[in-house]
Length: 357
Image (tube, rainbow, N blue to C red; front, top):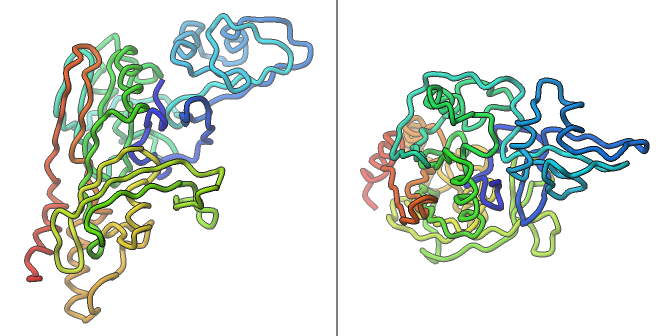
């Protein structure tokens, strides 16, 4: 089972779902899909039978799959299908993605496949593509595209929690994602994300030039109590915070902005976006975190027109998941993949490079 602790997100998709998130074992974050409370007269009953009786349309084999993937919790702990439910037990079905309110429809959406074998698939996601269905985005997502790609593969069920995306990136972030095609691959890759042994490098264009030009941001991150759509850096003793570590380095200082390399040690919600704002250097055109305003430079009419042109060239936060590295779950080989900057990000850089420092 993979989660944010196993890092289900490079930047968890709060943009895409309002499904409740519950914290469970090993720092993992999971979305609750169903919850049942056994009444006081409950006779001892296997949990798979207990759930089949309450979830119309779900098969016992599918529920066993969920149990095998540690997706069934009783009183907050994962259990296997033969666990016997007793009075007042709280039974939850949780997954590493938001709840799909509708059946996943296979859609012929082009995929930029960087690598694929019988175990894993690495895809370069374009900006603007939602990863998981949910919160109004029930079609046109990466999961719908994967359903189409695997429609002739009888071993791949897009709704099977033991398969699929191991981590995620925001809708308006571009870059690399890995998909597990077997349960063993998802377990193996999830363990790597949890152990922080994967290699993930992002490139971001930020307002200003950080000082020092390289360093590490080590904080707690949690939901902003003043704005539930934002995450924020929390005080060191805040029980709602999650440990987040980002290593950064300026790789190209420009006039009023700089291109920064960010290496993730953890994978919290909006981590890079939050940490760069915390340093006083929000991502360029990041509307959620204040980067869609003129934050550096004298705001003359000419300069404002230039900035407006930059916003039009790259109409989203300037963030790209450039590098992804992991150990192949079947061969044990170390694998590294790189995705070049997309056209909108490259066009944005070209505009800034045209201005002499």
